[in-house]
Amino acid sequence: MAHLNSSLLIFLSLSLLQLFHSAIGRGGERDSGIVDKSYAASRRHLTEEKHFQKLNILARGYMTNSDLEKAIKAFHGRCSRISRIYSIGKSVFGVPLWAIEISNKPGKEEAKPAFKFIGNVHGDEPVGRELLLHLANWLCDNYMKDPLATLIVDNVHLHILPSMNPDGFSLRRRGNANNIDLNRDFPDQFFQMNDDLTERQPETKAIMSWIKKMRFTASASLHGGALVANYPWDGTQDKSKSYYACPDDEAFRYMAKLYSGSHYNMSSSQEFEAGITNGAHWYPIYGGMQDWNYIYGGCFELTLEISDDKWPPANELQMIWQFNKRSMLDLVASVVKSGVHGRIFSSDCGEALPASIAIKGINYTVKASERLADYHRLLAPGHQYEVMATMPGYKIRSTTIKMGEEAMTLDFILEPTDSFLPHQCYNRSSMKVLEVMSNPHSQVALTLILVLAFLYFLMKRRVIFNHFRGRKSIVQRRVSAV
Ligand SMILES: *[C@@H]1O[C@H](CO)[C@@H](O)[C@H](O)[C@H]1NC(C)=O
Ligand SMILES: *[C@@H]1O[C@H](CO)[C@@H](O)[C@H](O)[C@H]1NC(C)=O
Ligand SMILES: *[C@@H]1O[C@H](CO)[C@@H](O)[C@H](O)[C@H]1NC(C)=O
Ligand SMILES: [Zn+2]
Image (cartoon, rainbow, N blue to C red; front, top):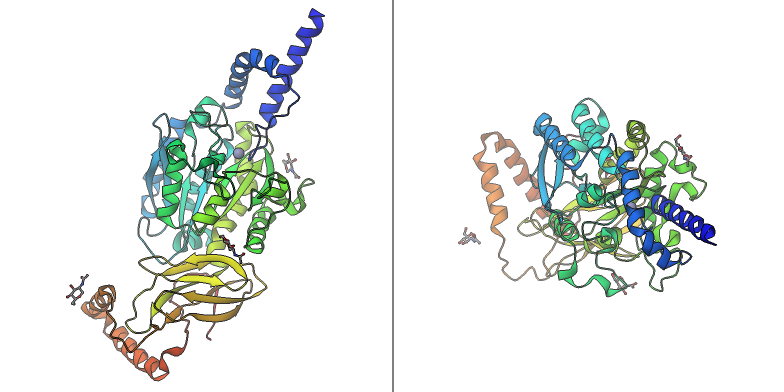
């Protein structure tokens, strides 16, 4: 009997270890209900200790948190012309959450889309943080040499947070220092479990205010434990495990397929058709980062599971980077190579209007930026869309576009609802004109602008017009005139 008990204990410890090790990235930590809790509790300490030691051995060759900080600073030192580094906040233990921005105008607000990558959301999923440093360095080394690197640096503000959970990493565990799963710590659309702000973890708070401030067009977080590109929704209203499509299901499937299709072998998955999955169809989670990004951040986020093995031997990291390189680049580039983009102006003063862009039949609104009024709306190719610009005090404008394989530029000019009332123009626009006039090289441009403005008045101020903003880039962009 005693013999039986001790072998049972060994068996339980081993299976617990196994459970820890193979816990799926996005979810995991699910109670199997099979393990006897009292046995498990009495062995937990020992098991965790063993687990920690086992992971410490596996972590050989991976960057420590201080190695990571050094790597980020070294990157910036090497590549300061097209990057900046900044911290978005601190972990529970006070480790800065370092982010890298890569752009030809880092830190400057421009009418360009922004993309973010977040790695190491779960402390025991370290592959992403390694790959993100590879990505940053590759872009630095290939800017002005490789067309995709150049396209990204010139047209996107790419923000990279290699580790969202440095404390969990150093503890070799999933949760943060308070043992909270950060991918369950966001407000949830169906259940109010995380609505107490004071309870939210510092890492989560830092991400939330970052998202609100930066206005990302799209993003991805990197996880380990599976090989699949996961897209919203992550949760269902009735908690059932079933496909739960968000309003932009088509655009998300397009993005997820773009990732899996460019990956070395993600799309040949046996478990997931085409290497992609709807989150709730796989298994529902609540309080995740992905859905929150889409609902409250205006940001199309994927959750990428990039390695079946959470801790592959460090000498395989270079290979895993090669497997994911093209996917990562293609996903970032998709925010300029697909979708509809433009700016919104008023017809009377020409000032930028922070209007909203809606698509008929899709219950989701994208807001133009406050200052530059640029918008970036991802859409699946191959369909016709009716695009509408709305702004209180202005008449709605809408036009139908046919989305092909390339991006479109579509600017809107909105007419005030009541154009007879004297309208106070913002000073922003008059400053713009002054800037132009003070520049001697702009005389010709100014004359041209005046002529165009006159023609425009003749055409009555009713047309929505699209103009190509003369981006000197290699982005192929179809510009339609309606
Ligand atoms: C992808 O390739 C890796 C490395 O060869 C292999 O371990 C993995 O099982 C493959 N996965 C699929 C889905 O083919
Ligand atoms: C649109 O989405 C909002 C939530 O974002 C929801 O409250 C509303 O009922 C939806 N409308 C339709 C017509 O589905
Ligand atoms: C806008 O410009 C007018 C005149 O040019 C000036 O009187 C007014 O104070 C300015 N408003 C702001 C907010 O700067
Ligand atoms: Zn994970």
